[in-house]
Length: 321
Length: 264
Image 1 (cartoon, chains in turn purple, yellow):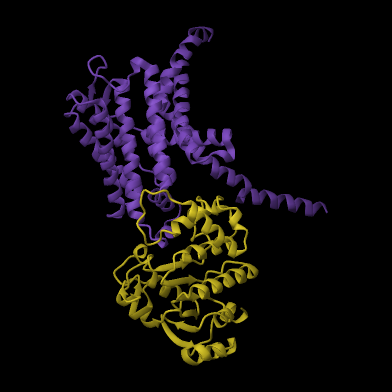
Image 2: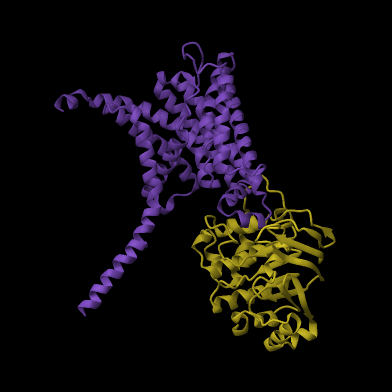
């Protein structure tokens, strides 16, 4: 035991914090996409597991082909938009439930992503040979670039969801019947939302590939869970720190903060020399707990078990009286 | 303003639950008609309103609003002509959005939703004035989420949203049934005021026979998916609840099965 603690160095932890922040920012962009579908549209969209890798694949292949990294990321964004449209149309035009639509897209994207990468599961890209937007080699500049990018995205999202079209999208997720009565085409809104969400996820995938120096066909596996974790952790943190002042812009910001917190915890787990393969289990448990809290809270106020206990108590008191 | 020609609708055809809900409805409303709709449970009152609103396609017949055939249009397209208030107060507003955001959504009913900012300062001012007329104090809480409002407040807000852009037709589906009697009267009074001020054409379904007699210039009674009674003008003014019950038994050959209607 003593040996274990002796092997942990505080400097080792502080040294890793910037990398955690950089990764958190990159995944925060992905989480913003998840926020659009999960919170605004009330759809759990599983296509993101596929589009994250799509973004990585498109970005890396285009950069390798000699294109500008920013152009490559724009292309990745559009590829994500397209994948989101597919999920949206499967749901709205063919009547497939949204979760299944997402799973179908994700499944199909595995082949598509492999095809983009020339049927190789992993393609490396070196920051020494290409002018990448960011890289894990230069963590501080990655934080700066990622930070500016994420703030720009938040500003654009804040603007869009404040417009007539964006408000219609939010109304669609909140109350479909009311939206239709107000003349909103909810199917169009759902497709736009899913598309925008997947565009952001692909962009995040493209950044992550540059950061880590390779595109992997499996890099998006479980992305939805990490995205949900970031959204939920961000909400809890935001509500705790800001309470009623948590407006829409701050909500978006705290989604990214949630991503950063997630990756700092991840860094801590690695520092404690816990097996990083257990991180998925750990994440799933955390997300399950947070998702369950509202339900359990309700149960603690009113449940059949509680009613039975109160009834027994009443009986006893009656007997005593 | 509204014309229905031989409208039929059968739900779950070919199954054990098959229900012929509308059986060849013919109905014509002139501009400014305020029609109350009564009838027993399952008579087809709400189905009639839903057919007009376009929740689902009808099986046969035609629906014409202000000279335009809307039979082939889905609900969100007909929304350009129609304002709706629902029975459930939760249905009419977006709970997680502000009062003024809800009104701004309604102010663009039937219009293209662009990338312009969702609400203008001028609109905010006019919303405030219109909310004031409801006398519920909502004009001072315009940035509050509608989820925080009471059922009555939400119904009044929905009513305002439905009429913010003058609809060619206002559909009220038992919109006071879920409210306590006092709140119901308040919402009904607001309904009456808005309809008469704007000269709206309206269809109002109600369970309450007294309200049906008291409001509007015309009353229709439905039974088994069709209109069995259509009373208007002078004739309607002299009606009593007893008259209606008597007429119902006379025409349908059954007893009116709703205690609520008799007691109301």
